[in-house]
Length: 244
Image 1 (cartoon, one colour):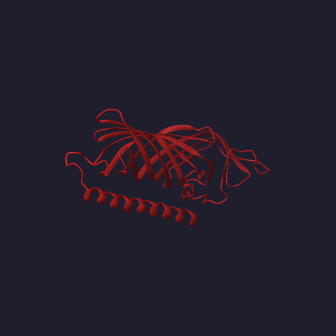
Image 2 (image 1 turned 120 degrees about the vertical axis):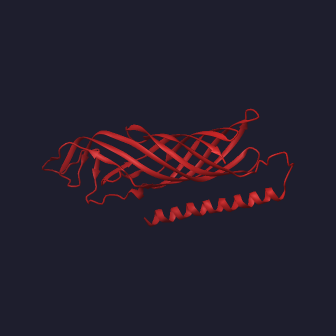
Image 3 (image 1 turned 135 degrees about the vertical axis):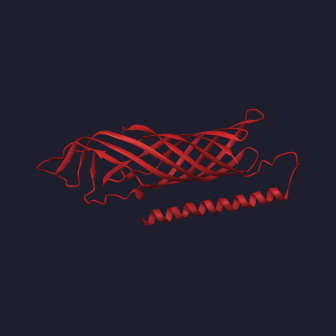
Protein backbone atom coordinates (compact mmCIF):
# COMPACT_ATOMS: atom_id res chain seq x y z
CA UNK A 1 0.00 0.00 0.00
CA UNK A 2 2.91 2.39 0.59
CA UNK A 3 3.96 2.08 -3.02
CA UNK A 4 0.43 2.78 -4.24
CA UNK A 5 0.09 5.80 -1.93
CA UNK A 6 3.34 7.24 -3.23
CA UNK A 7 2.19 6.74 -6.83
CA UNK A 8 -1.11 8.49 -6.16
CA UNK A 9 0.81 11.43 -4.66
CA UNK A 10 2.89 11.61 -7.83
CA UNK A 11 -0.27 11.70 -9.93
CA UNK A 12 -1.70 14.58 -7.93
CA UNK A 13 1.63 16.40 -8.14
CA UNK A 14 1.64 16.01 -11.92
CA UNK A 15 -1.90 17.40 -12.15
CA UNK A 16 -0.93 20.38 -9.97
CA UNK A 17 2.06 21.13 -12.23
CA UNK A 18 -0.20 21.06 -15.29
CA UNK A 19 -2.74 23.29 -13.51
CA UNK A 20 -0.04 25.87 -12.72
CA UNK A 21 1.09 25.76 -16.36
CA UNK A 22 -2.50 26.29 -17.50
CA UNK A 23 -3.00 29.28 -15.21
CA UNK A 24 0.23 30.90 -16.36
CA UNK A 25 -0.61 30.19 -19.98
CA UNK A 26 -4.08 31.71 -19.58
CA UNK A 27 -2.73 34.88 -17.94
CA UNK A 28 -0.15 35.31 -20.69
CA UNK A 29 -2.80 35.06 -23.40
CA UNK A 30 -5.07 37.61 -21.67
CA UNK A 31 -2.20 40.07 -21.19
CA UNK A 32 -1.45 39.97 -24.94
CA UNK A 33 -4.88 40.18 -26.60
CA UNK A 34 -5.09 39.83 -30.33
CA UNK A 35 -7.80 41.05 -32.63
CA UNK A 36 -10.91 41.53 -30.49
CA UNK A 37 -13.05 39.85 -33.16
CA UNK A 38 -10.92 36.70 -33.20
CA UNK A 39 -11.16 34.14 -30.39
CA UNK A 40 -7.75 33.19 -29.06
CA UNK A 41 -6.84 29.54 -29.72
CA UNK A 42 -5.26 29.43 -26.25
CA UNK A 43 -8.56 29.92 -24.45
CA UNK A 44 -9.08 27.41 -21.64
CA UNK A 45 -12.16 25.23 -21.84
CA UNK A 46 -13.98 23.07 -19.34
CA UNK A 47 -15.17 19.70 -20.62
CA UNK A 48 -18.01 17.74 -19.03
CA UNK A 49 -19.06 14.40 -20.48
CA UNK A 50 -20.91 11.14 -19.95
CA UNK A 51 -21.13 7.86 -21.82
CA UNK A 52 -20.43 4.17 -21.60
CA UNK A 53 -17.73 1.55 -21.93
CA UNK A 54 -17.36 -2.00 -23.18
CA UNK A 55 -14.72 -3.88 -21.18
CA UNK A 56 -13.08 -7.26 -21.66
CA UNK A 57 -10.10 -9.29 -20.40
CA UNK A 58 -6.89 -9.29 -22.42
CA UNK A 59 -5.43 -12.37 -20.74
CA UNK A 60 -8.39 -14.76 -20.68
CA UNK A 61 -11.83 -15.32 -22.18
CA UNK A 62 -14.59 -13.45 -20.42
CA UNK A 63 -18.07 -12.13 -21.10
CA UNK A 64 -17.87 -8.39 -21.73
CA UNK A 65 -20.64 -6.13 -20.46
CA UNK A 66 -21.38 -2.46 -20.83
CA UNK A 67 -20.72 0.07 -18.09
CA UNK A 68 -20.96 3.82 -17.65
CA UNK A 69 -18.55 6.77 -17.58
CA UNK A 70 -18.78 10.43 -16.63
CA UNK A 71 -16.25 13.07 -15.74
CA UNK A 72 -14.67 16.48 -16.09
CA UNK A 73 -11.56 17.62 -17.98
CA UNK A 74 -9.89 21.01 -18.22
CA UNK A 75 -8.53 21.69 -21.68
CA UNK A 76 -5.86 24.18 -22.72
CA UNK A 77 -4.99 24.99 -26.35
CA UNK A 78 -1.21 25.03 -26.52
CA UNK A 79 -1.29 26.18 -30.15
CA UNK A 80 -3.83 26.30 -32.97
CA UNK A 81 -3.98 22.50 -33.39
CA UNK A 82 -2.41 21.03 -30.24
CA UNK A 83 -4.30 20.87 -26.93
CA UNK A 84 -3.86 19.30 -23.51
CA UNK A 85 -6.70 18.09 -21.29
CA UNK A 86 -6.50 16.72 -17.78
CA UNK A 87 -9.02 15.76 -15.15
CA UNK A 88 -10.95 12.95 -13.55
CA UNK A 89 -13.34 10.29 -14.87
CA UNK A 90 -15.51 7.84 -12.97
CA UNK A 91 -16.05 4.53 -14.75
CA UNK A 92 -17.98 1.41 -13.80
CA UNK A 93 -16.82 -1.80 -15.47
CA UNK A 94 -18.63 -5.14 -15.52
CA UNK A 95 -17.18 -8.43 -16.78
CA UNK A 96 -18.17 -12.06 -16.19
CA UNK A 97 -16.04 -15.20 -16.03
CA UNK A 98 -18.22 -18.25 -16.63
CA UNK A 99 -17.87 -21.96 -15.92
CA UNK A 100 -14.62 -21.75 -13.93
CA UNK A 101 -13.11 -24.15 -11.41
CA UNK A 102 -12.37 -22.43 -8.10
CA UNK A 103 -10.20 -23.71 -5.28
CA UNK A 104 -11.48 -22.36 -1.99
CA UNK A 105 -9.43 -21.05 0.90
CA UNK A 106 -9.21 -24.55 2.31
CA UNK A 107 -6.97 -26.12 -0.36
CA UNK A 108 -8.80 -29.48 -0.32
CA UNK A 109 -12.12 -27.92 -1.43
CA UNK A 110 -13.22 -26.73 -4.86
CA UNK A 111 -16.29 -25.95 -6.98
CA UNK A 112 -16.82 -26.68 -10.66
CA UNK A 113 -18.80 -24.52 -13.08
CA UNK A 114 -18.59 -21.34 -11.01
CA UNK A 115 -19.62 -17.98 -12.49
CA UNK A 116 -17.67 -14.92 -11.37
CA UNK A 117 -19.38 -11.54 -11.73
CA UNK A 118 -16.93 -8.64 -11.56
CA UNK A 119 -18.21 -5.12 -10.91
CA UNK A 120 -15.50 -2.48 -10.50
CA UNK A 121 -15.84 1.19 -9.56
CA UNK A 122 -12.82 3.13 -10.79
CA UNK A 123 -11.59 6.72 -10.60
CA UNK A 124 -9.21 7.65 -13.41
CA UNK A 125 -6.89 10.67 -13.23
CA UNK A 126 -6.05 11.29 -16.88
CA UNK A 127 -3.87 13.55 -19.02
CA UNK A 128 -4.79 13.60 -22.73
CA UNK A 129 -3.01 15.30 -25.60
CA UNK A 130 -4.81 15.87 -28.91
CA UNK A 131 -3.93 17.16 -32.37
CA UNK A 132 -6.82 18.64 -34.34
CA UNK A 133 -7.58 18.66 -38.07
CA UNK A 134 -10.19 21.14 -39.28
CA UNK A 135 -12.78 19.62 -41.62
CA UNK A 136 -14.82 22.79 -42.09
CA UNK A 137 -15.60 26.01 -40.27
CA UNK A 138 -17.26 24.29 -37.30
CA UNK A 139 -16.06 20.67 -37.29
CA UNK A 140 -12.70 19.39 -36.00
CA UNK A 141 -11.43 15.82 -35.76
CA UNK A 142 -8.57 15.10 -33.35
CA UNK A 143 -6.27 12.22 -32.60
CA UNK A 144 -5.98 11.59 -28.86
CA UNK A 145 -3.23 9.94 -26.84
CA UNK A 146 -2.74 9.98 -23.08
CA UNK A 147 -1.87 8.35 -19.79
CA UNK A 148 -3.60 8.08 -16.45
CA UNK A 149 -3.79 6.38 -13.09
CA UNK A 150 -6.78 4.21 -12.15
CA UNK A 151 -7.88 3.89 -8.52
CA UNK A 152 -10.17 0.93 -7.77
CA UNK A 153 -12.69 1.21 -4.92
CA UNK A 154 -15.97 -0.32 -3.68
CA UNK A 155 -16.00 -3.46 -5.80
CA UNK A 156 -19.33 -5.28 -6.08
CA UNK A 157 -18.08 -8.64 -7.32
CA UNK A 158 -19.59 -12.00 -6.35
CA UNK A 159 -19.39 -15.71 -7.17
CA UNK A 160 -22.19 -18.11 -8.14
CA UNK A 161 -20.76 -21.54 -7.35
CA UNK A 162 -22.06 -25.09 -7.13
CA UNK A 163 -21.78 -27.27 -4.04
CA UNK A 164 -18.32 -27.45 -2.54
CA UNK A 165 -16.47 -30.69 -3.34
CA UNK A 166 -13.82 -32.03 -0.98
CA UNK A 167 -10.98 -34.38 -1.91
CA UNK A 168 -8.19 -36.10 0.01
CA UNK A 169 -5.30 -34.32 -1.73
CA UNK A 170 -4.77 -30.58 -2.24
CA UNK A 171 -6.52 -29.23 -5.32
CA UNK A 172 -3.87 -28.45 -7.95
CA UNK A 173 -5.88 -28.16 -11.19
CA UNK A 174 -8.05 -25.03 -11.03
CA UNK A 175 -8.73 -21.73 -12.82
CA UNK A 176 -8.74 -19.39 -9.82
CA UNK A 177 -8.00 -19.75 -6.13
CA UNK A 178 -9.18 -17.95 -3.03
CA UNK A 179 -6.73 -16.53 -0.55
CA UNK A 180 -5.90 -18.62 2.51
CA UNK A 181 -7.34 -15.88 4.74
CA UNK A 182 -10.72 -14.20 4.62
CA UNK A 183 -9.06 -10.87 3.89
CA UNK A 184 -7.72 -11.75 0.44
CA UNK A 185 -5.91 -9.20 -1.73
CA UNK A 186 -7.14 -5.65 -1.16
CA UNK A 187 -9.10 -4.09 -4.04
CA UNK A 188 -6.77 -1.07 -3.87
CA UNK A 189 -3.94 -3.31 -5.11
CA UNK A 190 -5.65 -3.31 -8.53
CA UNK A 191 -4.83 0.40 -8.91
CA UNK A 192 -2.21 1.25 -11.50
CA UNK A 193 -1.19 3.11 -14.65
CA UNK A 194 -3.30 3.14 -17.81
CA UNK A 195 -2.82 4.25 -21.43
CA UNK A 196 -5.33 5.87 -23.80
CA UNK A 197 -5.61 6.12 -27.59
CA UNK A 198 -8.54 7.41 -29.59
CA UNK A 199 -10.24 10.11 -31.64
CA UNK A 200 -12.40 13.14 -30.82
CA UNK A 201 -14.90 14.93 -33.07
CA UNK A 202 -15.89 18.48 -32.08
CA UNK A 203 -18.62 20.70 -33.49
CA UNK A 204 -19.09 24.12 -31.93
CA UNK A 205 -19.58 23.46 -28.18
CA UNK A 206 -20.32 19.72 -28.53
CA UNK A 207 -17.92 16.82 -28.91
CA UNK A 208 -17.72 13.04 -28.86
CA UNK A 209 -14.79 10.76 -28.08
CA UNK A 210 -13.98 7.13 -28.80
CA UNK A 211 -11.11 6.09 -26.53
CA UNK A 212 -9.36 2.74 -26.16
CA UNK A 213 -7.95 2.23 -22.64
CA UNK A 214 -5.33 -0.34 -21.71
CA UNK A 215 -4.89 -1.17 -18.01
CA UNK A 216 -1.23 -2.08 -17.57
CA UNK A 217 -1.49 -3.84 -14.22
CA UNK A 218 -2.80 -7.32 -13.57
CA UNK A 219 -5.83 -7.17 -11.29
CA UNK A 220 -4.90 -9.06 -8.16
CA UNK A 221 -8.33 -8.90 -6.52
CA UNK A 222 -11.71 -9.96 -7.83
CA UNK A 223 -13.45 -7.61 -5.41
CA UNK A 224 -15.53 -8.15 -2.31
CA UNK A 225 -14.66 -11.85 -2.20
CA UNK A 226 -11.19 -13.20 -1.36
CA UNK A 227 -10.73 -14.57 -4.88
CA UNK A 228 -7.32 -13.90 -6.44
CA UNK A 229 -7.70 -12.89 -10.08
CA UNK A 230 -4.39 -12.08 -11.83
CA UNK A 231 -5.89 -10.89 -15.15
CA UNK A 232 -5.55 -7.75 -17.30
CA UNK A 233 -8.43 -5.75 -18.77
CA UNK A 234 -8.95 -3.22 -21.54
CA UNK A 235 -11.97 -1.24 -22.66
CA UNK A 236 -13.52 0.92 -25.37
CA UNK A 237 -15.08 4.12 -24.07
CA UNK A 238 -17.64 6.23 -25.95
CA UNK A 239 -18.53 9.60 -24.40
CA UNK A 240 -20.30 12.77 -25.50
CA UNK A 241 -20.05 16.15 -23.87
CA UNK A 242 -19.99 19.93 -24.12
CA UNK A 243 -17.41 22.67 -23.70
CA UNK A 244 -18.21 25.23 -21.00
